[in-house]
Amino acid sequence: MNNNDSPIRYFSAPGRVEFGGNHTDHQNGRVLAAAVDLEIKAAVRQNGSSVVRFKDVCNADLRLLAVRPELFGTPEALVLGVASWFEKHGYPISGFDADISSNIPVGMGLSSSAAFTVLIGNIFKGLHGSDISPIDIARAGQFAENVFFGKPCGLMDQTASSLGGLNIIDFVDPQAPIVTPVFAEFSGYSVCVVDTGGTHSDLTPDYAAVTDEMRAVAAHFGKEYLRDVCPDEFFSSIARLRYLGDRAVLRAIHFFGENERVLKQAAALGSGDLKTFFELVIESGRSSLSYLQNVFGHSSPREQGLTLALALSEGILNGVGAWRVHGGGFAGTILAFVPDGLKDVYTRRISSVFGEASCYFLKISKHGGRETQFN
Image 1 (tube, rainbow, N blue to C red):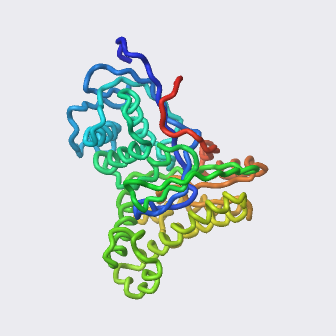
Image 2 (cartoon, rainbow, N blue to C red):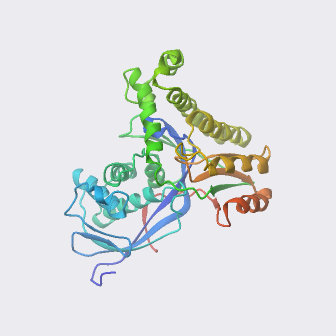
Image 3 (spheres, rainbow, N blue to C red):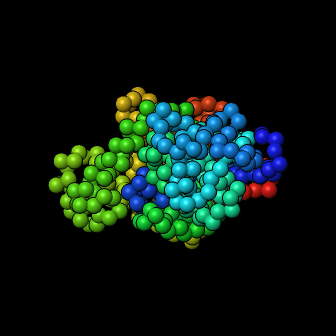
């Protein structure tokens, strides 16, 4: 830390899980997502310069707010991207020194990079007392990831991290998402994310193909996003859509089903009907498996850790709880709702296949990105 007269201030941002709405956000759809009790934290001190320094992480000069391809995929790119969005929208930025710590596992679909951008946004907000909303901080984070970092993500990850709690997030207007808090009590069950050990490297073409194919279907109807296409018109036009490829049609089928399923999931939780909620979670997972087809990288069909984890979970849980692919897919993690009485059995059997540190049991956090009193 820079030894000057500026006080040390503390900031944090959580990771997130997705219960419903797999690959719907980039089509202006709905998601059901929650902040979790894993977070990235920073002890921050203004340094009176234009440089943001994270010890052993990055050194970013805020005078150089141009996209630099050589920085794609780096923390510097995320810092500069958030700073660029803030500056373009009239919010002040300045240099600071920070020590950070994080217990959000990288590459597990818990949105460590989105949490980092939300952290940066809250630091700029806090240091300058800016009147900026959590949604706009999320938008700054998405801009950073899309433009400066080179990741074609939607707005879900950043919004869930920035808001905190469990929410339906409806991106029908991505500039002003509609947020509906959802109360959930998972009494007797634990939320578990399973790390299958797969890597997301070299999977950008797989992710991009999902977006490209869904948008190609939308374009057939003269629309930019599937959310703007009438479902009845789509389903009556399937024979004429096959020129785009059957996978594109199947992915659109997934979108329309998943977009409505989010509302059904939230309604089930609101009425305390966990049985129906779990059935919908499994239904969501099967739609991702069969229609969205994002459970393994299509360039490496021999590596199917997600599919294996889903099959094992179905066998272990045997009709209780739920299981589905989590996050972007193709590699990484699945999500499971595990009865408390089966936690030890589930952990032991999953760990015997994917390793001792493969099961992460999580809780929903009410806190989003924020300034805190203590690190």
